[in-house]
Length: 254
Image (cartoon, rainbow, N blue to C red; front, side):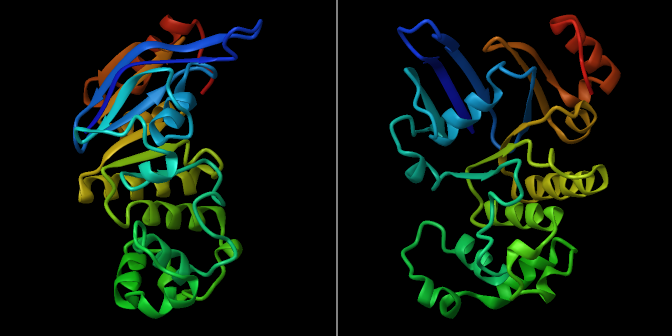
């Protein structure tokens, strides 16, 4: 479960460029629920994601993950609770390492190890079984450098790595935006399957309202740092969501 309590965040405080993104903003996401954040550029989506991950510090308020206050933890220490996949397929993998080494790294998360003994101590059978779940044949390319994989293959691997240790919270920051429509749909299918199988509390950012309705449990629209829409996906259709979006913002570019 994720609880955000009365957080505030202002950039460029005390200057002519001062801008407040959040002012005592609160949000609670129940365990195992996949919640997608939508809204226009500048509404606070990415800022919220970075605050949760620890990349940005709040000016006030608190962040709790499964009841534990992580507000003062660094991004590195907060990673023990969080799995994250970004928009760029290269962000989630070490492109100079092969598939086997990347998976071994993910399974060693939170443990002390050296690159020298990484492969030696890895569970090859577990790695192969996890890779098979993607249905991409990556288990047959264990020693292929991830920098040589396609964007879809890298993003699938990133997703598998981010969930390898079953994080308490999964953050997906437009993780299919850089992919073609067919690959994007495949990644979203895999995403939903992993969320359901592992019952991971998930927060997504997306601009694709069709996918938002199809793959989310809950949909939240931010506008100027406030919640403008909060609805369960089962209770709304894509056309209805677009209409509500336009009512709030006056336009929608899908």
